[in-house]
Image (tube, rainbow, N blue to C red; front, side, top):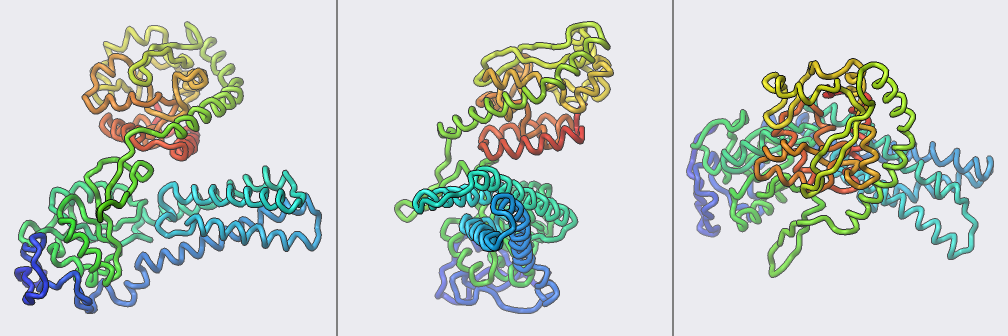
Length: 511
């Protein structure tokens, strides 16, 4: 590290904020000045490094996504048009209109925004909105111009096209995530804040590389505090942020916790505008995501409004999804349940089905149904096996549970034993997605915050089931359940259902 100087501005023109009084590496430059940092060459910002920076990579990813959308949309549209119009000159014309119009709509709904590509549900939501707007536009033009439009194209072709586009987006996302796991296609990220605030944020971002934050260094209020934080080098003080961004070709500056005053944060945004980096502020809210947060300007302030309860329309949509999908899945699963029940009945003594009282929404008890996967004396033998539990104090889990029958192991591996709970979903006791329904004795052992799990209907599957299933610790399971309760949406439910199908087919984390 270069020589240490006190972060003092030699010019009286710029006021000295208390946020920048600590020891710094460089002489202080005003964040409001036309040149908040000295432009100089380093090994981090030479031409070869510049070609690997996220803005360059992101533009390439953006162009590839657009090209793939054009190819896929054309490949899907042409067969549908040919099936209706036959091979005629109208097919190329209508294909160009459909594909071009759809791409424009995806663009207008920010489906090609690099902030959303490969991260978060907004990418899929943009495609769905574009398809909905396109279908509505076609129907409206048909009605207004009295033009006959094939219902097959609107109500079958458009949904298939949307599914195809989302499928290739998903495939592209998987490719991007695999690249990020290898350290590629990342945003060079600088963390700013106190060592305690930075350490927690660093651990979380480092454990989720698929978000694309490559943590390269830390700026503390003063560089004499320590040399490393969470394994990251301290590359400067808060006063050095703009210069560090230039020297190390930083793409994103993440300010953790209340380490900067509002005025200093505002001035830092001015400096980052000059040096070409994004500013991300980590608020004090924990595990709260976008749908619940709204910024409202008032009296020159940015008021952060936090949604404390799900709106009624979202509750109705979830209820409709549970009933419609629950009935459909129960009909489809009936043959599987019948065969499994027969196998259970023929291979071990006792009934094919097992029922148990569980705790539902707001602590209401209900009877939950499962296919029996254990011997009939399993409940009596549990106390004797308590010390052998692989669980985590609250949940009882054993990888080699002697109470599980041979058939039961197969049923559990692929979650077939859970299928009768579709009846609970249809009845309204459970939801397709939500925290798993606990036993009364488990609820009695809950710590205070864990009771929040009971705020929503328990689910057939949930966020922690698709994040490791039985391999997770109790603390990790609770954290994921609380994240779901605080941030659930119909889109999140659909994503969890999709991931559940993958996890079940792989049999990962189940025992």
